[in-house]
Length: 268
Image (tube, rainbow, N blue to C red; front, side, top):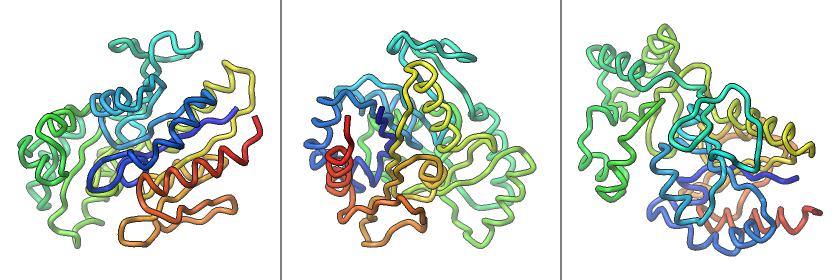
């Protein structure tokens, strides 16, 4: 059985417009073949829910860089161990609580010039991201991680050291740095989801992972078919693997191209 794990910004969604218009042919093929499309992103649960509605899918998803794995309640009658019941979901939490992350942020801003979403207004987030005010509100509703702007790049290693002392690590996405719990990343979450599917279906899972940024590398390292989407400046994130596929185009156009090729080569 084939499962596709995908990043959003700069991958399925275009970097500037957040559009998936050019990926629609591939998305139709995915739906027709009933392939689980697992959104794996730094976005929040509330943001993902809106995108799933637009995509017309109701699949499990991985939020906030692996902080939380959400399976819809009753999904395929799967039996899932060690999950919390949260608002019609079965949640497997890998991340720290947002409260713990923000406590660290409040302490560290006395020593390093940075600003996270917690300290930004909805308007500021909208201006920085290009999101609408409504979308920026959802981006602020965080559960496990904190995106931030670092104004002193030369202090990054000091910041990483101090974060580590609190069980927090730093990763880099398309637009922001993120404070995340040391026990989470997209790769760990992907492995858990893959394992749940294999246990419940009795089938061997062939996993595709699609991303464009540094925070996607842990996911690309654990899937069978890693895919790097070209960035808008024409470069690719630094990653190598014998099965690696690189898109010719950035964003949803590149996503569409590689997914169609993979599906055409995959024998059901």
